[in-house]
Length: 594
Image 1: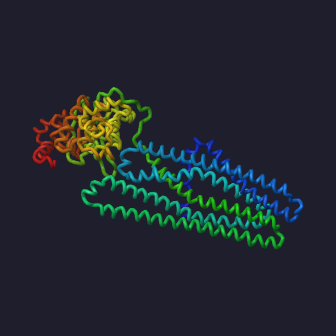
Image 2: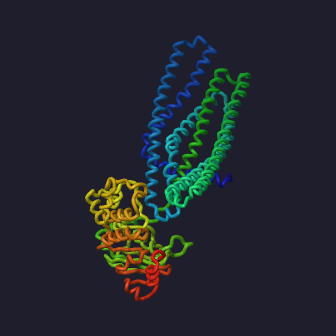
């Protein structure tokens, strides 16, 4: 790794710590006591060599001074320190770990909240499996990292400093030799440590890809089976699974190199003390009792170094988790409330587009260009035209799922950017072609339109949506579990539940995005009746696939990649015999292909 890369890695680590340390703030009292307990646990390790030194020195120089009472006193003192050590260790292992879990929980809470704020464009480019990996697996190691990281560095620092001072007091030259070896150990360990960090990040990414593959395949399992493509899915999974295995294999090799290097230098330092110390003892440069104590202190020192070395694996796992956490948290919330945004209230529903343009990216060019449109309150507007003309995009700009890249949109004469997102979206109801039902009961899915609504309100909304009768025919009525994504219900039933959800919300503005295009004729008829009841008194945008369903719209807009090329009532557009006339004739001739 080049010096530039090392510098960048160091700067990146500092930046990650700056994002992570604020999570300690609510628990500073717990952390302070935890670090105090960590300090206490070092006392036993540091005191024992001094006790041994005293006993061996007294025994070799003046055995009469070493009385049973004095030995028992030393033993009692050390036993007391051990009890103190056990109590401190209990606190560290229990309360300390709970603190780490709280930090992990807080980080997961903040990540989920941030994900809720990110625009649709983020989800257009990001796999759900990758997001799931970041919010679950990547944060698993945070508990151990948050708890042990301050402890390990404090304990190791105390032991190294104390050991250095005491060892220098016994023999300076031997101590210098030991500490000269340490930088080499740190240098080679760091090389493998940086490789480990990259390996951990690669493995997390690969695991995210694996999760995405599983999520994609199992979510579409009915399509897989309908095309008899089980073997194809197995092959694709095997590729991702092998890729994950290959990356983890490299990760474990780097871990093995890391631990082997540290064990090698650990052995070199210990044998250096034994050999050189023995030579010094032969020449009288160090006494026997001091040499024994020296060996014990070196053992304490090497144990501390070994602990911090072993912790480095956990450290790199934790840093990797924080890094992937930071990558999500660094994603900008591009659509948010402006300063001083106010609540949108008493909405009539008049909507104006003023020179509105939009593009998903500069490279793709504009999807909408210079759109000008006035929709009066309570008016029904239908959007038709070839695929890719921007019909859904235009509607998605109203609730600010995407931000217009040019021009302005107004509700009741006021710019939608001046309102809070929550109040704006609360005034808009959407019924889409692809209905999403949450895992839960029928009542819970309807109540999603107005959390906290009474059962009577839920039933009333279901009746307005024409869903009450089929719901009551279900095994448990409104308490029937709908299954994952509502798999236990038909397309028409799911659509009427989604309409009931909007009835319960009771918004003044309505967007219908090809709400009946995926239904059979009987279901379409039932859903269309529900939609007509829902549309009464509301400003409605209908994206139409089946043109027979929008003949009664107040105005029909024909939208292409050139913008709004035609607009008027069904009769006016048919008389004009333009693009709408051609589309309608094509649909009337062969509705299955239109």
